[in-house]
Length: 92
Image 1: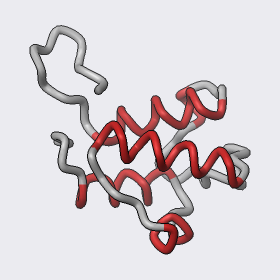
Image 2 (image 1 turned 90 degrees about the vertical axis):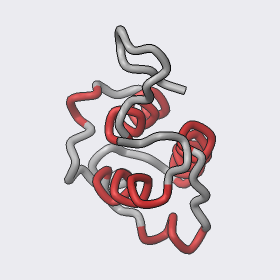
Image 3 (image 1 turned 180 degrees about the horizontal axis):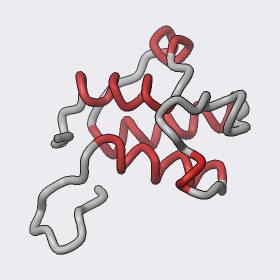
């Protein structure tokens, strides 16, 4: 789980976790993962990248993303909003 610098067990917000996951998976600069960036079209994620991102989000945040939901997630913000509403592991 990603922790805030200097924190003692406090989890980072969903946005920070998701931006780190996406930028790591796609090997891109975090600055490119703007909230309105489309994960596939703007950031270059293919189907396997999208699945890997969703699996990492599920693991890190304790949220289950069904295939139906994953198909509806287009932007970074869509993923963040879904995680904020469904995460079990401490999004703020």
